[in-house]
Image (cartoon, rainbow, N blue to C red; front, top):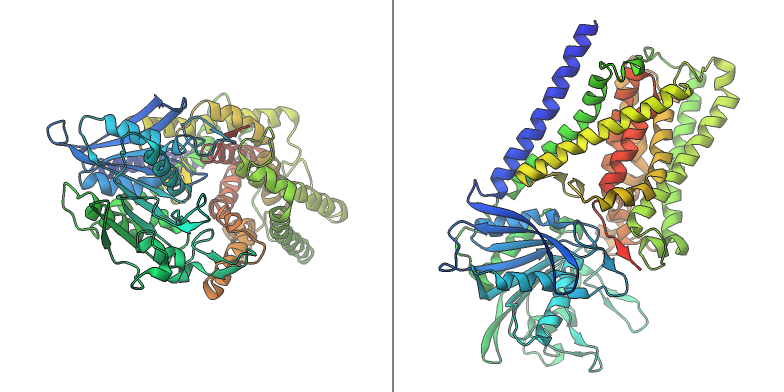
Length: 617
């Protein structure tokens, strides 16, 4: 039996490593265009006095004698440079030199100074300056594109470019953020900030933040799906003309040209039926990106905009996520066969069916925890003090506000789990044979700390794989808003600040799932595990569903529940679901709920602090 289990775990360990390797090779082949694009991971001190991190994509054949257009692309707030993979893969395939930046405050760039948000165009204009210095870039054909606040960075950069002695930016695509339509220094009259540049907007019809018009009192007058008919959109398409003086009503998807200071310029607005975060993983939006830069700068390699391969890379990096998750479990179980951790190997007793009273307590606790999870999240989203920290408006030690918000919510729910388990034990479990030692709730101090040691080794080994993949292939593990990537040493220090919040949740969530609520359903333990995994994420999922069904039907978000709060839940939903399976698998091999809890908490903390905004005050 032992040999069989060992062989089975060896299979899963081998599979996890195979998936990681396949992921790395496959993603690398796609993003290098089968070796025809060279990728460089850059760090440099910019003219703003900040260190910037970026990826440089140089297509083969580009040289000082054969220059190519250059494009700087940027992610949005709370993200990093790899979030632009769809764009840099496709643009580089078409012969553009591409720089994908970590905006200041993100990824491996220096933290952002909170009272100087526009610094260096939040880094984009500093990258434009570097692009202009590359000997193989045509300085008459430099474009910028950003998603969300990456588009805001593009607007900052245009303002800096206007003030410069020599203008460097020729084309601007703003994805899921507004252009600058009016002149604040001239009574908010409509104007053309962008001058002779070619400019486009991707205005998603269900954007959570932008493309609305407002009354003087701040009342929303039009929804994002009606943006194209608003004065702002019509002025933009008419090159800054007051729409009341325009000769025609212009439409979405059409390229409009006009002479500006003797040069022909382009304006276009695309209006996909998408949400704000969807723009980073949308074939439609990538098509708009490619069409725009083909018109504005001309692609050296003519490939139809509908011919896209970035989805294949996304599939490979998602495969890496799966491999990473399997590795956490398989490597933990493999270490139990070593001398260092053999003492922790203690298979849990087989799960048995619950009786009627046990089921009543189970369902009661489950309902209470789900309701508390949802309502506590809503309550925190309405709390002004918490919001001040979450959005970095209040100077505190918590320099990553978004991580603080999710961490605090997690800790509150961890405390709720303790209360629910305590009540369950005192009023029911203790009287009905529930043994705290036998179930691993009280494993003994030696096993407890030994388990922490095992958790640390497993997490270190898992992220060692991440760094290996980054070093040799310049890829990572990601799917849309869930990303596991290499990070700087500074993130470990930041993680120490937030790990107590996540420990408070994931450790006691593991105790609840594995010690208090483990039994069979219809004779199957996996059904119990699946149910608990769904219970973990059902409240966040419901909040997201309510938000977007309301948005789809009315054109507006749920009153009082800001769009960012539902977006922050996207990765949380998947993480909460998967964490239940990880902790259950490890518990079955150790009868210790703390090992899986610690592993989940450490991994989630590192993922969180390495994929967000960091500010200084």
